[in-house]
Image (cartoon, rainbow, N blue to C red; front, top):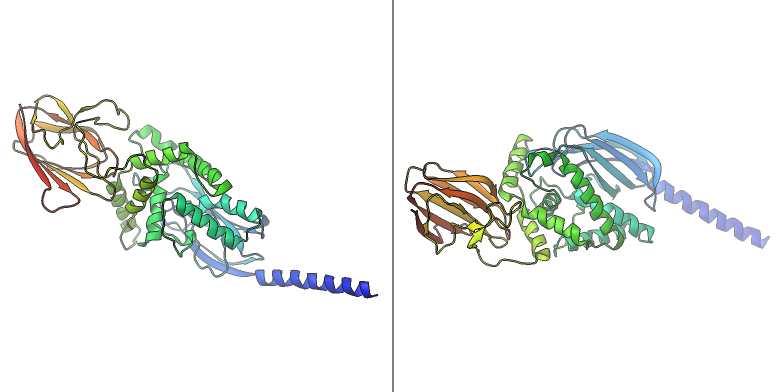
Length: 407
């Protein structure tokens, strides 16, 4: 009789515990969010899957769509038995590198706890954490512990020492804060830029593959150490045109009616470079010889017209216009012609420079890359002369000036 009573008490306690957990986890939830690589466009499909304590799907699912071209979506009054959910977004996005829509759809994920959340954003950082969260929870960590650990590990990978109070699902590339700048920086370094138009349609497929490989590497131990992956990201950085990207985003946000400025994403790209670059330049460097197209023809080197000590050149010859600047630096080159403007010309790809044509008086080059070779091709034709002004670190007056002539 005594044993029976004990068993009944244990069963009753078990049932009450189970009922209590289900009761507190059941409720209606309403929230909104944004899907961002760049902003995803109207029609992007959003699917919410309810998860259990081990992040397995329970079978309950809800769907909605992005409305408008700023990536915005919402789910209202959905009834769930668990606060843990996986939200999946699949659609086309604004490519910040080119200022156009992606050529193919991209799928991104976030795993989150909806309790107390009115905003849940889906982005590349939440996507990259998905597999790591599943690994940690399956190993016995609570979701809260797993989320904090994966967030810390991913920041270490990015070379970021500061801690952010906000969760990755709160980061917003259209915001003005440091978390938003970090998200934008990461969104840029995973996307390859190319000057070859035939390669552009395959870029989203490449991005999907790269994200998958980064996620697989990060999942196991919270580190991304595969050298081919690091090399890919460093190559992507070497091809970014930071001024063009900032201008593209400012125009896009204006078109969408989004106020505010683009955050300082450049500094977080610099942090990544500082962690993984084999060589860091600490001074402005104007090489004696440089290829006018470092990406596709690195060995086709010709004399560099920017070498400060060189002032006499030969008419009819091609020259490179090349420089490397340190991290967190700026450089503007002004070429001021003494002639009609018909005895010189810039042609071919402009690699890493923003080119501002001031014909017939010359041109301006603004540095778009840091710790990377910037170069373009210049021809000196009929004999003439010009002044070249160097403005390092946004100085109002030239830090160096030279007069050149070609005969």
